[in-house]
Length: 204
Image 1 (tube, rainbow, N blue to C red):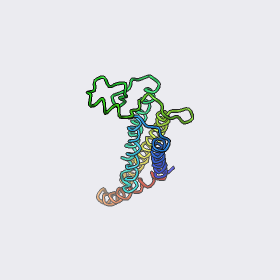
Image 2: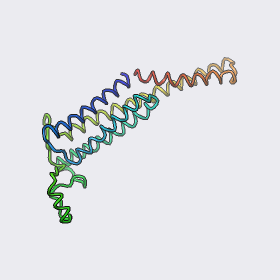
Image 3: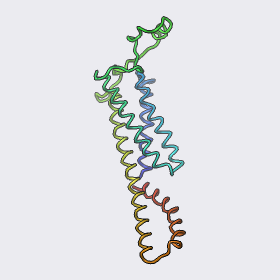
Image 4: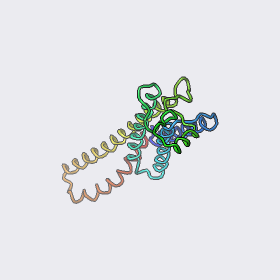
């Protein structure tokens, strides 16, 4: 599996997720809660990162681990949202509803009453019996596993290349080659080899 192909699939899924969220909000008329809005951020960040990676291929290693961390955080956030929906957790400060306005001033109270605030514990929309927070948790978890595996595979390929390089260098020394003569040769090998290793990792 090519890393570029996988990243393009993740890019596509991120775009579809955002389009679906805005379709449900503005076309179907289901207003999102504050946590729902926050859960969109990882997809925006993912799109930006992958687009940058398509321009600068040398950043692939950093991009993979960054995406893995982003989707891991998104998974935790979505499971937390799921827990609020199920009553396992209390709503946080970002989930202030119209019922939690005792400490507000009169002016703030009037402003809050004019707003249509959606509680994070209220499930506004379901698909196949699952809330959007649940679906997002599943998708984020799968993507975090995929990107983390790609990162480990990338590291493994780079390590294998470096080990092979050292092995061939030691063989050359054992056969009587001078270190001075080998220095210029292996200096060129290192430069071109790094590019080859990256290309190989993209064809995994």
